[in-house]
Image (cartoon, rainbow, N blue to C red):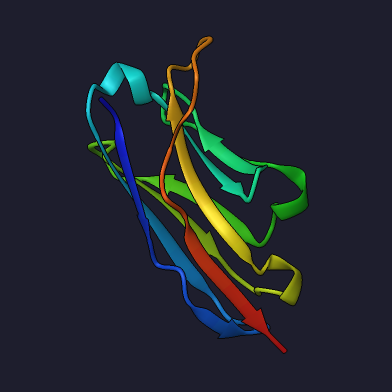
Length: 112
């Protein structure tokens, strides 16, 4: 069973940075694709080959990476804006056709 635990959420001012982490455990084949979501909007993902993609609204400000063991997923968030305020979730699934497993979320609050 895959388990995901996010951390790193905090309150910051506009222009600040945060790095979110997602510690993953369980069967590697059930989590070979891992994702970051802002609420239920996908921010980006890492595929089975370890290639990271950030979706268009966040390109240039956010970066996704994974440790070499592929047990921790990171979301580096720079130049944070008030509209980035949300709960961010880590999710994982098999890369082909399966349901997501979700973490509990970590809250990011950006104030002006």
